Length: 449
Image (cartoon, rainbow, N blue to C red; front, side):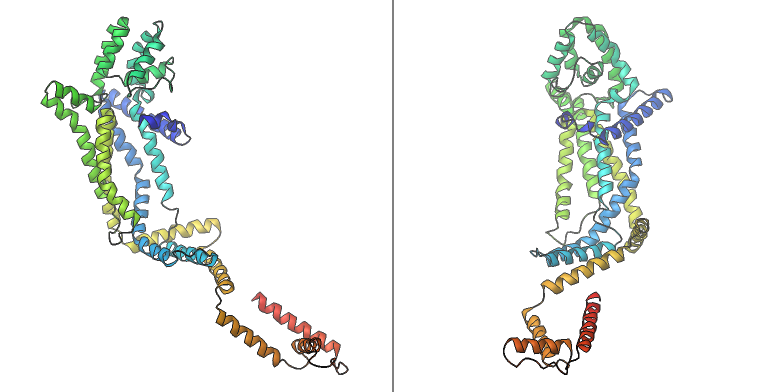
């Protein structure tokens, strides 16, 4: 997670703006809890923040779940079409395959891109959440104010930057000095927020003048970070190792409770998601869902142990909220028949087409016409071609006397020496011209149709 953040992904457009907006939400939540209820607890604020953000994501989640439910019904039909045209790379086959797949999407009132927008929007929100949780002081002013006296004291000491960079380099949990500017107050606030008790002790050893204000800050932030007796600024793995060394049963339980909750809630959340039918073992969607059922909980336990407990708390809270949310969405979707969902989709698709000015039927008709023309040109059999040639020869032999075809035959026989030069004394050139013109006009009309 720290490696991803170091790559600068949270400075990307959309994600950066999303993170800024969610930071404002977190700041409002903390101010309300502190000002109205007198509660200065980051853990409680993280849980409320998780509930609020996932509540705001409900429309996107419902849209994505509808797409998943529709996909589970469409998938067998789409796979059947893909198998039908497997290995066929010619233009006619590819156009025909696309036509048939579009017909399936049209049948269910959806499209290939229907599930993409909700997924991308949800991803942007989820990526924007992490810096808010990991860097609380950057977004919550009252938390930042707790660290500022210590930061100002540090910055007043000569050579503070080199000392702080040395501490930052010594711990993988802190911020790499190669990627961050330790001469800035905001950077120091973020670094101090990640300090654990042992890191504070190391800082005081290097800067003895900081002792009084350092332990005052530890007391204040300890009160803010304490959640059910767990310091959410510490990593559960560190707490677990310390509890094992001291043989503290209570400490061991507290150290493992957040990672275990994170894994358990994640397992429940994945199991409640709509499952792809297991009838087709070659279905990649079904296989990925089956794998995710067990890998995601294990990954959650890993995150819960190795990252600060505050992030593990958010991970567990988000999975719990998703589980409750999924139960409500499942109930809502189960109350609607597939016919109702298809009708809703078709109605929305019709409105979109009206705005664009082109109906799906017109597009499909054009695609079908184009495909049939290509097929006629490329897929005609040798037997059919010979039959058409024989038919053309018969028509030539039985051409009406004086017609353009009869004249052409006469000229052809003369050129090959089969007959003498044609007698044209009884031949009316104006009649031939008229006949040729009529024949040409008929042929052009046929080509148009």
